[in-house]
Length: 129
Image (cartoon, rainbow, N blue to C red; front, side, top):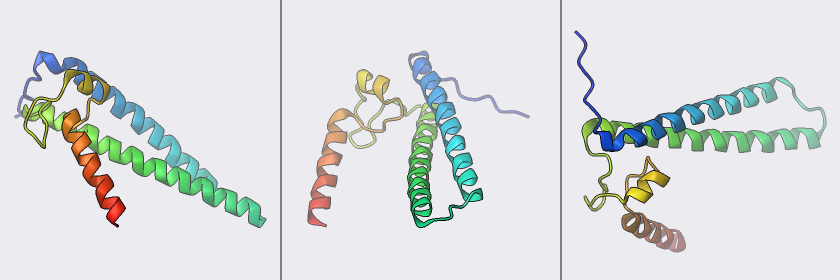
């Protein structure tokens, strides 16, 4: 017997659509990048310049694929928060996330204040390292 999916509150309908659309677009882009990597592997270069150029292109494509997969994970996590009823609540402070921030970054986990604090801490750690 199928269990009924929990209803998403109407206030989050736009956000759910935006998340699904972004996930679909990222999946398509990632697929294109994977196909480009595979195509590049099939035709090897003959001189060192071609080989170096191909390796640099592959490195860029792999970085884009990793970034797309990380974004897809964030989108999936946001969709899970919608289902759980915790969407729109900052994971650091427990305060509501600003509506404008959710419109700009529907997958965000943090309010603007919490995100700025995390960025400052991350920057400080990088300086020490």
